[in-house]
Image 1 (cartoon, rainbow, N blue to C red):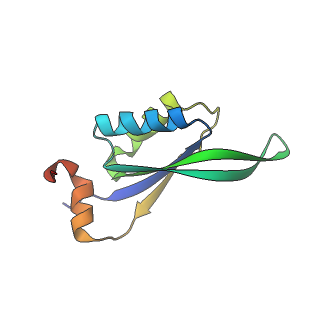
Image 2 (cartoon, rainbow, N blue to C red):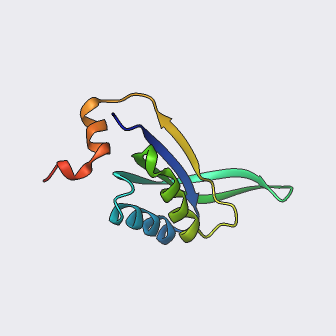
Length: 108
């Protein structure tokens, strides 16, 4: 059976938190690849409109790892209510999807 894959998105305003999430997910083989981007988020919180510099973490992983990934994010995250969104990957370059399934098959 071919595994299904997903992209999980989360944000934080603390670069060290973003890097800690990335390290833990990679060290525990829960994700194949993560990207951390600088962004500005605009949102309504407690009745007020806010904007904040944040780091968006895009996590590419097997869909069956989602629950464990969510637990890691919640454990490390510095927000009371972190954004954690799971987006299904419908299709992609077959070789890339093979790598997502098992990053250890490729060596440098």
